[in-house]
Image (cartoon, rainbow, N blue to C red):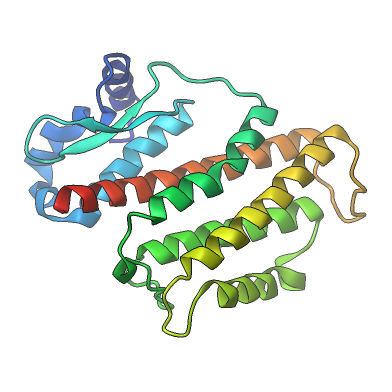
Length: 239
């Protein structure tokens, strides 16, 4: 599913306005028929295709396109060709993530928002917590702060603020906290790129390394959003 040959097929379907994952349907039906009855397996397949397309520079054109056959009902439709974005556009995209995530959460039942400390089932709440942890780790990296110095403490404090006593993600609190943290992060990134922020003495990221780090953070955003979108679509179809 992740070979260069498959990418050619994914790209061809994308240029036709069809979900890229349709290119893998026949092989999956022959080799892994369990995918048909396993939601987690279908999500994994969608994530693999999404990783291939994002690595090649494609972006989501439509989150939902019809897939022929009995294996997948819907799949992501990607842009026909890779999209070139400068780092300023990427930061702008990152700043819009809280809004997109908030819209997704509105359609997810509370029973799927319980945090699993053991991370055995990887529910929605765990994926959102992962996004928060990514932001904290990325902020610390930009600021030149080691995880041992403040990362774990910051994450623990944020998690306590985001969940209620019964361990269910507090959506309203999460939206407010995440929006505030992401706004501060993006503002800091813009200032650092412009050379107008006061650099921490321990920061050793060169401008090129900072740009690469921003692109990596953006890729992590898109991966998590894509995974959650797949989950939301599964719920919608199931209902």
